[in-house]
Image (cartoon, rainbow, N blue to C red; front, top):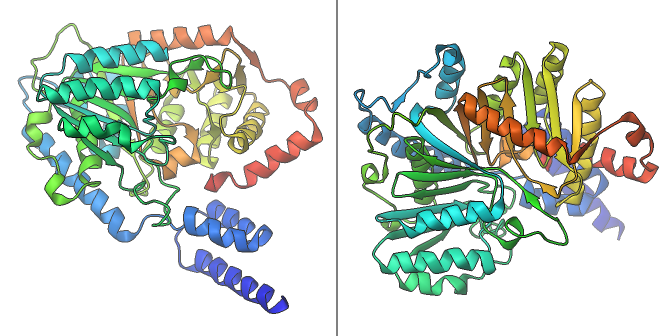
Length: 479
C-alpha cells in the first residue's frame, strides 16, 4: 500500500511540475489545479486529464485557419454604395468603441439592422419556427443544448418538412451540452437530406480528454437574411414553467439585416472545422446578406465571438471596454457571476467613478457548485458598493450588459471565467438608444421581482453555506 501511495504521489508531483513549467497558464489557474492535485491526489490526476489539458496545437491551428478562410469572404460582400459594412458607427461618439470592437474580432460593424428582443421562451420558439417555415434556401442552426424532447422534436419535424422541400438544413450542436439527445430522433431528417453534426470539441470528447470546451453559442440563420443569437437553447425547460426552475427568464435577439452575415460566417467556420473535407459548406457568398439597406432599420451591430482556440479572450475584452467606457451606468444580468480580476477591477473602478453599477443574478442554481461561487463573488462586489439584485421570478438565464443610454450587448456569454476562456461564445454589441431603452425596461421590470443583497442577508447565512461559497471560489479559475 505504501508503494502505491508513493507512486501516486510521484505522478501527482510530475503533473504539478508539468503544469507549472510546461503549460502557459494564468497564475490563478495554475494555483487552482495545484489545489486539486494537493487535496484529491489520484482523482485530481483524472480530473486534469479530462478538464485541464486543453486543445492541442493542431486543433487550435485548424480552428483559427478555418475562421481566417471563412471570414476572408467578407471582402467580397463589401459594397460601399450599400453602406452595410464598415468600421464607423452611425453616431460618431461611438467611433472609438466601434473601432476597438472591429480590431478585436476582425469583423466589421453592420448597419441597417432590425432587431426584435425576445424574453419569453415560447415566443422565441414560435418566432424561430415561423422563420424556419418560410425558409426558401437554407436553414443553419447551432446550439449548445438541442434536446430531442417535445420542444426539440417540434423543431426537428419542421426541419424535416423543409428538407423534403429541398431547403438545405444543417444542424450543429454541442454533444455534452445536449444531454438526453437521441440521435435516432434525427433519422427522418437525415433521410430527407438534412445534415446533423456535433461540434468538433464535443465529438468523442471523453475519449479525447477535452470535456471542458463547449460550443456555447446559440445561433440560427435562415436564408442569409434572418438570424438569432442569445441565451435560449432548444429544450422543454426553456419554454415551459418547470418545477425545478419555475419560469425561465432569458434574452434572445431576432436580427433582420447584415449582422446575419457575420453570424452565418461564424456558423460556417464552426461547421467546417467539425466535418471532413468532403462535407464542408462551400459557396460562402450564396449564404451572405445581399439585401438593399432598409432605411427604417437603424440598429448598428457588431458580432463579437471568442473561444479557447484564441488566447485574446475577445468576449472578456469587449465586456471590459464597455465597463470602463461607461459614463452613467452599467447594468448586468447574468446567471453565473464568477468574474476574473480584470472584470472585478473594472466594475470597482466604474462604481468609484460615479457610474451606476447594478448586477442581477438568479436566486437558485442550475449548477449548485457554480452557484456557490456566484454567491461568493456577489458578496465581494457588493462590499465595493455595487448594487446586487437576486431575481426571484423564476430562473434568470439572461446574458445582458447595458451601458449608458445607447450601447448594449446580448448573447451567449456569461460573466464568468468559463465564458471568457473556455467556451465558444457569440454576442451582439448594439448601438441603438431604442434597443437600450427596451432592455432597460425589462431590467427595471425584473427589479420588481428581485431583492437586493444586503449585509444582513450575508450575516444570516450559515457557516456551512459560507464554507461552500469560499471553497467554490478557490476553484473558480477552472470551473
